[in-house]
Length: 404
Image 1 (cartoon, helix red, strand yellow):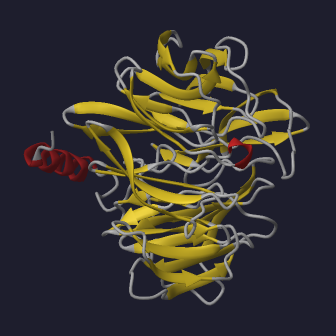
Image 2: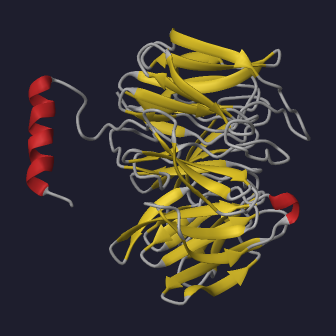
C-alpha cells in the first residue's frame, strides 16, 4: 500500500546520502519500474544542440533486438556474434564492460537479423536473461556469476516459437514468471532464487510478448498474451480466471497487454488489429475492436486516457475508452516508444531519436536527431538523464539529455 511517510523518509535518506535525486530513475526491466513503458523521470531535456544530444559513449553488443536495463550504475543488454550470445554489464557512466558472460546459441536469422530479443530483468542482486533458443539464466548483477540456469525447451519442456523466445522474464515476489509454451505448462512460475518450478498451467503456444501483472478485486492476476490469445491467471497458483481467443497469423502476439482497472488492451500486427477487453465475473468481453492499431512487435503506452503506439508503420493516438483515432503520423517506420514527463520518446526505424508531445489534439514534434544507422526495432530507454538507443545490429549509443 502506498505510504507517503515512507516515500518522504526515502527521499530524505537519498538527499543525506548524496545519491541521485528523485527526478532521476533507473529502468531495471522491460517497460520500466512500473512495467507500463512510462518513466517518472523529469531531469531531462528535449532541447538539444543542432547535431542532437551529446554522445556519452557507444558500444557494440552484437546482433539482437534486446533493449537495455539500467540499475545501480550498470547497463545490461545482450547480443549475438558467431552463434554465441553474450550478456553484458556496462558501466553506466563510461560504457566500459564490468563483466560479460557468453554461451553458444544460434543466431536464428529468420526474415530479420536474428539474435536475442528478451530484455534483461534486474531484481536486486540478480539479473535474469533469456535467449531466443530458451537459455534462461540467473546471474549475479555485480559479477556475472551464474547462480542457476534452465533451458526452456529441454528442462521445462517448452516448444520454441517460430522466431524464438522474446518475452522478458518477470519477477513478482519470490516468483519468476515466463511464457514457456509447454504442454500443460504454457505459463510457468519458478522460484527466482533456485529455478525450481512453483506452478505451471495452460496448453497454449508461446507468444512473443512479456507477461504483466495487475490487481483485480483484491487478487493479483497475470495477463499472458500468448499464441492463442489473452489468458488471465491467478499469480499464486496459475489457475485460469478468464481467456479471450485472439488468433494472429503465425501466432505473432508480441505486444505487452496494457491494463487499467478492469480494462485490458491487446494489439497485434499482420492486419489483426486491437481490442479493449473488460474483465468481469463472466470473463472477458470486448468493448471495442478494430484494425486501427496493429502493434507488430512493439507495445503502446497509455497516458491520460489515450494510447500512443505504432499501427504497423504509422504512429497513432487512440482514445482508450472508445478506440477512436485522434491522430496519425507517417514517416517513422516500425518504430518503438516510451513516455516520460508527458512526452513520447521515440526511436524511429531509420535511426532517428524523436521527442513528441503526448497530447491527443495533434502530433507535435519537439526534437529530432539522427543517432543510428541500419534498422532499429529496439525500444529506447530513458534513465538518469540519458537516452539509450540501439539498432538490430547491436550498436548501442548512450546520449546525454540531462540538459546540463
